Image 1 (spheres, rainbow, N blue to C red):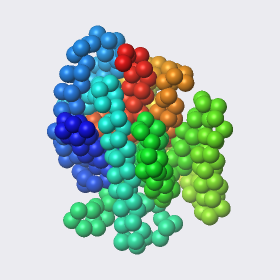
Image 2 (image 1 turned 30 degrees about the vertical axis):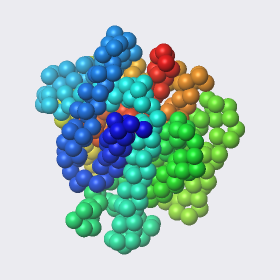
Image 3 (image 1 turned 60 degrees about the vertical axis):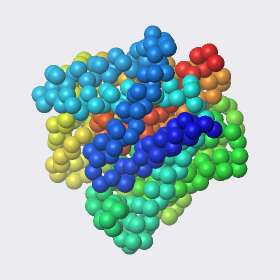
Amino acid sequence: MTRKEKLLLVWMTVSFCLFFGGLLMFDRRPRLLNVLDVLFFVPAFVYAVRVHLSDVRGFLKQNLWLLVFLVFATASTFFAEQPNVTRFTRAFFQIFTLFAFTQAILRTHATLFWRALLGGILFGALVAMVDFYCYYFVVGRPFSDQLYGNFEVFHINRFITLSTNQLHASMYFVTLPFFAFLAASRLPQSLMVRLAPYAATLMIVVYLIANQRRSTLVALVAGCLILPLVTLKKKLIVPLLLVGVIIGSIFVIKPDIIVERGASNRFAIWTETWNAISERPLFGHAMAGQMPDLHIIRPDNGRPDVYSHPHNYYLSVLYYLGFVGLALWIMIWLPSAWRSLYPGYKAHLALAALATGLTAVLFDGVHPYTPFMYNWPSVWIPMALLAACTQRQRRPA
């Protein structure tokens, strides 16, 4: 390995450590965004430009739907009641850079990329375990409590603060096991490479179980179900059976996690959101900092309640960008998902990660178009990986 390759590996590994652990480490998201811009996004953009300059037309053709969506979503903020040009221009830059860099690095240094990705995921899993340990053993909460409590903040010491919540944490980690196995499958095989994704998955599954979110379990089932369906390999039913055992154990040990909270007012929230969508169904209300509060009547007790978002990524896209925006967003990943069904691309794990993420945001989606956020590992990162894995096969060696 040359000195340049060593520096590249270190840079990507540190960047991915922040990607998959940073939102638990930084008490304020803007600080992490500033660090990621300087550390990763600006250098990654420069790297991607240098690689794609040799075939600009091909790159633009392959990413046409992504570019159209990004332009449409960013430009829409000028028509919003409270436009936020800075935020959505930053979202454009970061999302575009993620796709461009992933495709570029898989053309030039694929092995280094997968090694750094696997290292970043392992680091994120360890950070999750630190939060798990601090909440249950330092704060001293019983294991029956949801991890992080009810929107509480815990200052453990000057370096550790527990300030996230179950919704964000689930979207942040639910796809990482699939990323880990995808990365390991692309690396030269050794004992450590084979064991690494299992170690990361074990830590992440423990962490996700502690979050006690049903949507996470449903998303994991969807992702695990994709693998045997698209590969027709019976041994891949094992992870699906494992998730089934976990769900069954929860029913036996503490069924309240699944049955107690009913539908969590989702249908009432979605109905109110749909009423707002129907006011501007074609192009939406345009991208703004926040959508208006959703006022509902709780079906369980008849009391009024207020929510700040629809808890559904797809309804969020429809609210802000209408059916035109939703169609453009689907076209970003649908062609890649279709190509990944063919065995030659070897992208089944990337497809499973995307299926898991898109199922998770069906129940817990927050803002659909934003700079780096908790939902990126459920939406934009699997999209970028899937696009890169399928497009790379079409380029000459």
